[in-house]
Structure formats: C-alpha cells, structure tokens
Amino acid sequence: MTQQEFIQNHLMELRKRIITVALAYAVLLITGFLSVEHIYRWILNDAELELTVLGPSDILWIYFTLASICAFACCIPLITYQVWAFIKPALKPVERTATLMFIPLLFFLFVSGVAFGYFLVFPMVFEFIVSLSDGMFETMFTAEKYFRFLFQIILPLGLLFELPAVVLFLTELGLLTPDFMRKYRKYVYFGLVVLSALITPPDFVSQLFVLIPMFLLYEISIWLCAWRAQKKAVKLVSESV
Image (tube, rainbow, N blue to C red; front, top):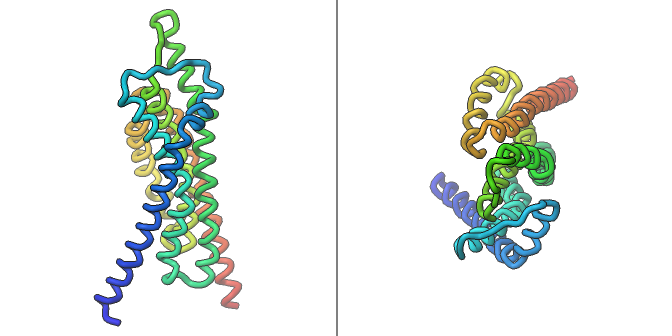
C-alpha cells in the first residue's frame, strides 16, 4: 500500500465516523425537539419565576437550543468512542484497554460538571445578581435571556470537568507529563482567566464562580497526571526486572 492510499483510507474512515456522529446527532436533535416541553418544565421545576417571550423567534431559539444541547450531551459517548476507534490501530493492546475506560468517564464528568453548575453555581450567581435589583427595579426575565445566562455558566463547567479524563488519556499515551503541566501552570491560569471572561456573563461574580472550579480542576489534573505517570513507571520497572 502506498502512502497516498494509506492516507486516503484514513480519510475515508474519518469521513465515515463523522457521518455516523452527524446522523446520530440529527436523530437525537429531532427527539430533543419533540421533547422540549418536558425538558423546559424539568429545568424550571424549582424556579419560582415566570419567563416571557418577546416574539416567535424567541420560541424557536428555545426549542433549537434545548434540543441541540441535549443532543450534544447524549452524543458525547459516541463521539469519544469514534475518536478512540479511529486511533485504536496506532495503540498497543494494553493502551487500547486502558483508554477505552475514558469513554464512560468523559460522559460522567460532563454530567457532573453540568449538575455542579446547575445545582450549585447557577443558583448562587442568579440569586446574587437578582438581589442587586431589590427595591430598585421590577425584574422580568425573558426565556431567551434566562436560558442564555444559564447555559453560559453550566456548559463550560460541563466541558471543563472533562479535563481530568483528558489529562489521564494523554498521560496514558505518553503525550503529557506532570512536569510539563507544572511548568506551564501560570500560562494555563492566565488562559483560564481569559476563557472565564469570554464564556460567562459580563460580571465579576459569575467569572469568579467559574474560575475557581477551573483552577481546582487543573490542580487535580496535575495530581492525576503525576499519579498515573508514577504507576506507569513502576510497571515498566517491574516488567524489565
């Protein structure tokens, strides 16, 4: 097989896996669109407020946003499996088994991050901001503004909670070391500060509530990287004896 044929085969395989993910996403998107009313009521179950809409476009925005987010969340296991299956031929048998466990772990961490943001961070930020208007304004929330504010907080946390799994995955493949993570810690912290300012509403409280978990997750990731690297080193020494 020539190098050109090798590349073409890999591109065809990549195309097939992307199409598989796209079809699954489309099916889940339609399913979510049909279930938006239940999702909407579940999200607002404990919220003591009534949301309004300013026009038909707001209604469509809510439907497509809720459906697309649910579809993406459900697609995470499939996306990670397709990535793993694509790189599997380049992995050793031991690495294949070890990295396969990260598929359910990524989904679990994403759900944990979303739950952390929804049940802990968002209520505190929302109540604090609303309390600032007490006695000054008559507060009325549109559905679009409310959900945009909600998703700007919980979705980044859901994605950032996957950092430990990504770090363990790269450590398992030998692409990441704890020394590298410690060396570039200050640059990562600066990047996280910029990221928190971009993904959260433009207020210091929201950014702080997102930034603190980011810092903690990075420190936990360094510890996990060091732990896994040490286990791999011990295993190599025992095998060489």
